[in-house]
Image 1: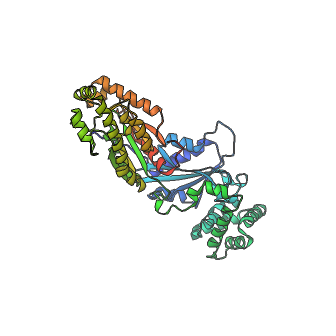
Image 2: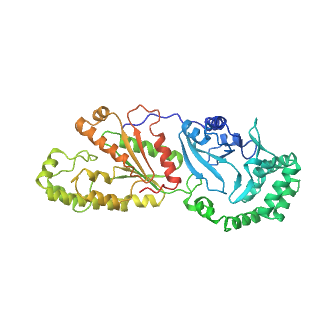
Image 3: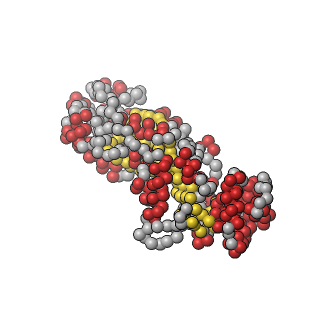
Length: 467
């Protein structure tokens, strides 16, 4: 069995370096969030805890490249969260495949917010340009207020950092922070937070009371529309949480391509790479040669078409073409049998795995009915309407001479013509999320990188309204 060569994946230190470089090239003010040792601790970890970064995004200079776009160019990363609703936190989370699992980086931009609460507007956020750390009132909001709003007091070391930042904040900046928080959380809560910053012991009841205030503000008339728009991230994922702690859905990945194009190799490699992310996978076969719906085998016998030795073949053999000419009516009937079988296979095999939030990797799809057993039949169009479109449609492709060398049972012209038809199919953009072409010819250093990232994104992000 052919396999793709091993790909040298970046480790977390390399990811951290790429993030630093991307932020530096953006021309924006930026800073690490959290404790001073947060980046170093993130490099040592192997779990899904993300690295938090803030950048200003307050310039309209079009020459400045957003750091997320630079990261997607430098690293084959997947966007797993993208929030950009007004008056809510604006952030993008990207996941990078590493040898120890997914490394997640969360890049927040603009105002510093938690849910419906404004902690610091972008024009009041000060940054140490050398250490890339938040300073003054913004540091206090990030180090202490942000974790409290999320329902917990931070660890003592982080509280000490917040106290040091508070001590170095001028009186006017202190007053603006206190007034802003008091207007949103109430003077009682803010008074206890300030007391902690001045050295008092943390009040264990403050995080709970703060969460109540957060919920109340999120459901207020002025904020309820934004809360509803971001309900997927506001409501805890619970049992719908994936390995990154975010809500996920099942994904159907359909692979198409002529025999010898590398579908099986791609399916195996994709499953292995997704397991590194912690995603569960399943497989299914949607070719015509393994039909088991009652009546399909009878139709084959009546047509005089034997089951091919190569079970993945969908192009009729010479005896089959002769049978098609001799029995056009039966061939039309067979097309409807196959259409019914596709619907049955989806309901019986694919839908249950998808409901369990697995990635279902399917060899071939209902599009084969466009060519066989009766290309002009309405059965193919009906099947494409009844069977939901795949979330990701994948064309495995290589130079046709290489494909023919792998599978010489069919002519070079036949293989070239079928690959051309699959390319036209991809141009229709029939998938619900994305279409991806995988180079199986050995010219790409990481032929599966884009596909893996696309599938991870399809599991996390809302579909874009496409069938």
